[in-house]
Figure: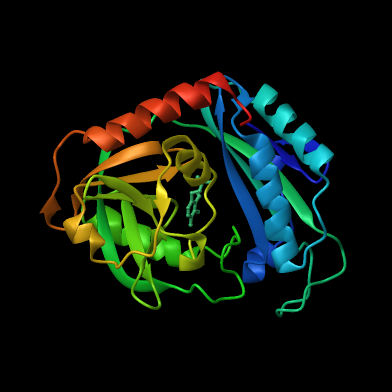
Length: 273
Ligand SMILES: Cc1ncc(COP(=O)(O)O)c(C=O)c1O
């Protein structure tokens, strides 16, 4: 495996950043996960736009997007795979041991790993911890993801693949690495960005392509929804067949099946929508 670190490809064994990198010591960094099918990244322009927005939110210098694109191409060419997750990480770089960022300049790492297509349906749990819709990092895709690590481990313990959060005022928000859609009275809804969820790229495309409503939803909408699905870069549109102890139909319901079909068709027809 070859990994891009600060300007060049390296074999994985020698692809290193400093132990004093601010991403390592305090989680001062941002990232993107991009799907690549047969070496072709999907929706890269949207991912790079979000990378820049996240950098600005953290006060990091704008990433050099030409370099990031070059790095993505080099990494995908060097690591051929039918389906891969391309991971772009951009951090505060070499810094003092505290929360002050150093002035050595940012670190850029681009890596790829082969993956397999997700199942069409999955189980999720709810967790008692909240997303903060008013935090300094709200809406940014930062490497400070340990809350997601804890919640996802809880999901796996309970035989589920995702954990869903409410925000601090009890509204439905998102999963550890996905957005959530629900069908209520036959209508498709997803929480608005003001709920504190990440502006998921799959979410935005799904809203555009299905006409889903962005609606403030109470967390217990999950107990009433006729159908539920998740969206993310590696899940695309994925139906939910169980929430906590509540069983939903084992296959995707009609609204979900249509969203899956539309997403497959539209994303197949345009690799950079
Ligand atoms: C917290 C969170 N919410 C939602 C998503 C889904 O976003 P996207 O569709 O851009 O992958 C992600 C990304 O994986 C995420 O980390």
